View 1: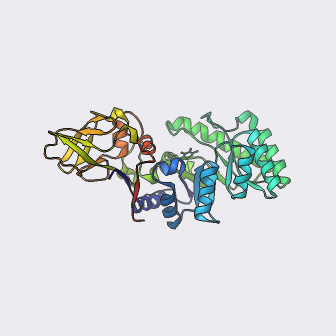
View 2: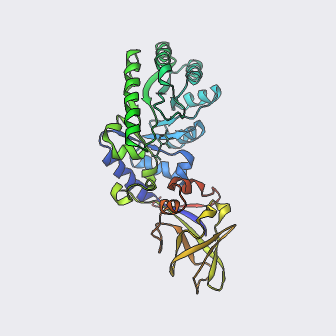
View 3: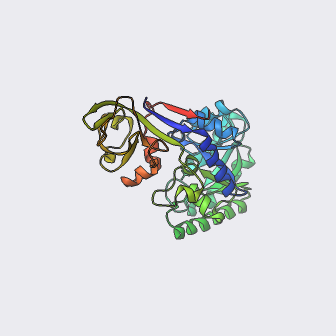
Length: 347
Ligand SMILES: *Cc1c(COP(=O)(O)O)cnc(C)c1O
């Protein structure tokens, strides 16, 4: 059967490796996009069992689902902009809310006032990525307004945060000084941000001074290394998912495999990568509704092909395949159709 096999023991090993590497900083496991395509439920349950206490859900829907699944006590961070009504749901589900503009601050404060419970907030400074976040010139006024809401009991100040490109150290360094300045100004306004968070996978591991109190890590916990960057071994992680599909028919030395473009395989993989077969690695010739593998005499219907590993005769991970078509591992992982069943090792 066509399936994405997810190894939850490997997930836990990666989580341990990341936690070991980031020292005193707390790990927030980012589980947006259905845990990068690996399945929100099994991934978050296993992470929770492994002691993860912060989850990055992105949207309120996912955050609420996590709250129902994992119960009270854990912290769930959401940062997608949403309506006032959705913000009330976020407060009711005790979510930590990332706020990146003045309008959202008002909506969240109102939701807090209406719920009779201070909304837990993390204020986002734009440190140069221009992807949501309050611009530095507007920040002093923004944090003064937040302080008014805090005094009135509408919000509870938890953190200051930002997102950086992690593409060039020099740019990241500039972002970090802007971030420090923003934390300083928040304090000057009377706010006491207890949690500062700035880095995702890459900076969390490579740059200790970017860790602050909390790191938001997705990719590395899922064993997805940066395309063109350090190897899994250097990072101390390993891929956790294998995409497998059976041979459905055979024509001479070509085998048709029951997975293709409709299941989320990029058609550009055709002719550029090898997949694992019981006979060894074979070239992926074509990706259409199904896929075709060539130079495999003796193939039989039901034989299992590993599109990406870890798996039989397949050394290539999602990131290896991604590199062959000029993209990143996350892109392949999240494109696997929700209709492709996920199965779990170690559940
Ligand atoms: C996706 C995301 C992360 C995690 O990034 P990785 O590189 O996968 O670790 C962290 N923070 C924010 C705001 C994100 O959107």
